[in-house]
Amino acid sequence: MTGDPEPISAQARRALEKELSDLGDERRLVAGTLHDSTSVGDQADQADELLRADQLERLDRRIEDITVRLRQAGVAGPAPTDVVGVGSSVTVRFPDGTTETLQVGEVAEALDETLVTADSPLGHALLGHRSGDTVHYVTPDGPATAVVVAIGSAQSLS
Figure (cartoon, rainbow, N blue to C red):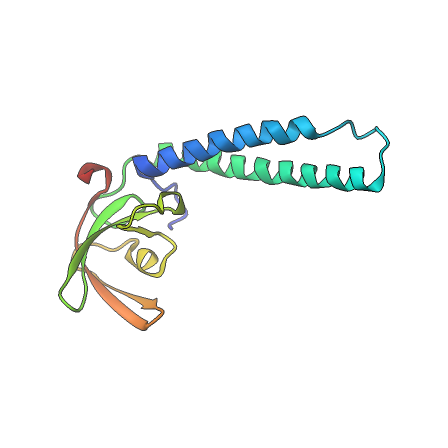
């Protein structure tokens, strides 16, 4: 990733918004179980209270991460069509002559079989490249290459 706000596909946005809603519900449940810290209890009660407080802190961090990501994606606008970025649809040709159209996305979109995440070896190698570029990446079987044939917005192909 470039460090600039990255666009996300509509599917990723929906997944993040759903996760944010679910986390909000979970946070309300956990917060409702916390007791007044001035009440006296045994060590088991205190340990349980600490666990719930830690869980609440973890939920708050994830809620903040998603909120920031959604805000940044809104600023970033649509996926680029001249260079590969998060949200791009990319047609690549492999050395055996096969071509495949993939979407460069985020983990939140991982249900799609045509998706490569931006932090995967191929997804990372594709970022910032243009049509005609050859990208090099490492697979469990060793070094690999692919040629970027075409770039488009994943949303425009849906």
